[in-house]
Length: 282
Image 1 (cartoon, rainbow, N blue to C red):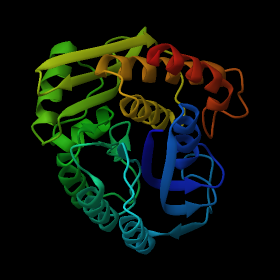
Image 2: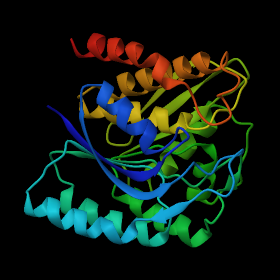
Image 3: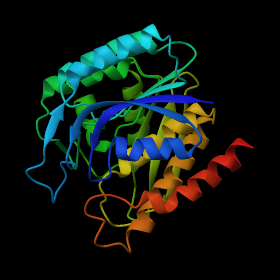
Image 4: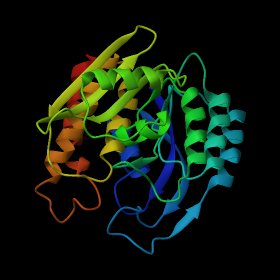
């Protein structure tokens, strides 16, 4: 049975990070170990205030030490939201201890959205994240994160040539395969673009654009992509299944207007994800 470890925070209410990654990767038939970096009463998105927060940074090295003593091995190491430069450094050490030629490292370099850094993040944090990306086989930024990782202006107007250019520049940071989410050239379609730097080949996957913003869709995409990688799917299959399932979740959430402010209704679509995996892995 394939095994993945994912390192990110967990919100007791609200759909993002571990509350998305754990059920989605598990539904793909993969054993999913977790290292929570923090516990929050709710996520920090719009609509929530006065949430509780417990930092678990100091627990991570002890967990890693215990796992090393057990000689645990994983098919993929996957990081999401990391809350501080110290956490990034600790995760970098974790990659040294548990990464290798027989597994893949996937970093979702969570930095911001809509052209801005998330609250509490600084350019020092961005520099730390760039160094972590250098150790990754795959990185999965959105366009905002692309702009900060590369130190270029954020833009919502671009074409395929621009996307190919920034993909090459992301690969130059040191990762083998950058994957950009939320790529769109118009209001009709949206999807993802990837670049295999070893093969010098580009990959694209687009589907219908739904004109709503949802919390946690990036986590959905990254989790499905990670699961697909661990299952041995090729790069085109990985971005196709991640784009398709993310759209499924968005479309399932649109009718649930009382829920769409705090997350996507991915639970309603897990049966579809299971069927996609069975189809691709036959």
